[in-house]
Amino acid sequence: MIFTIAARELRGLFLSPLAWTLLAVVQGLLAWIFLVLVGDFRNLQGRLAALDNAPGVTDLVAAPLFRVAAWVLLLLAPLLTMRLLSEERRTGTLDLLLSAPIGSTAIILGKYLGVMAFLSVMIAMIALMPLVLAAGAPLDFGKLLAGLLGLILLAGSFAAAGLYLSALTTQPALAAAATFGLLLLLWVIDMAGTSQKTAGSLFAYLSLPRHFDALLLGLFDSADVAYYLLFVVACLGLAIRRLDDARLRD
Image 1: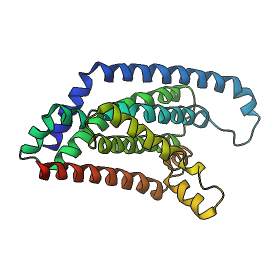
Image 2: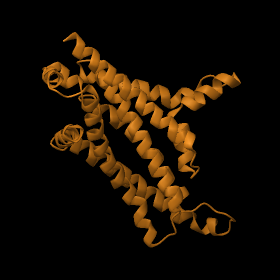
Image 3: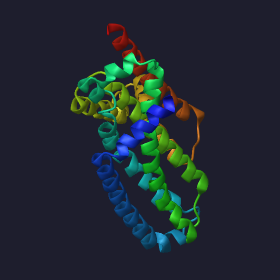
Image 4: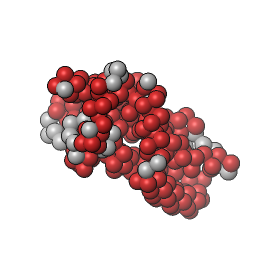
């Protein structure tokens, strides 16, 4: 049943003009940035040849591209997740779904996997850009895979937060605004508490991009992966609890 719900959500996204528009805009924007980065790398090749341990195409093209893609996903995720539950609650179709012999866990996981499948397609298309450079330049596939893993984990965290906040309201626009506000707070939270060492360390750990930046550098740490997985589990658990409460009220 989980995969049935996921397939329904994925099909609904691809039938939506909004999803296709976002996909086209994102790919066009990132393709332009990719070409700019490649041009800059070509201009720097003469200087890099004279340096020891000079950064390669992975550091100067793929990593910056993935950083921009992370910001794009920050803006995109609220728009993709805002209707997952709020729209169904507003139209009354969620009540029909809750009355069916389907557990809240299956509903949440199905919707989450559906939007993650769409985001995975988008990330795969982004990954093709630096991969085409392998024909003419040496790529550090370890760093590339670590960066892709970070991008997927980051997208998964965005989608989980958006799904939970979508379960709290009947207004998709409000869900999108709340999701963006929460994600932006977690994006810049490490800027707070810099005057106190303990608070600064805590805020730095809670910051979403700090763990992503480490993976972009090729530094695979299980603590970074665990952070994203715990964030996803917490958000999905809260969303399941919210659906269970709605089912009991009905």
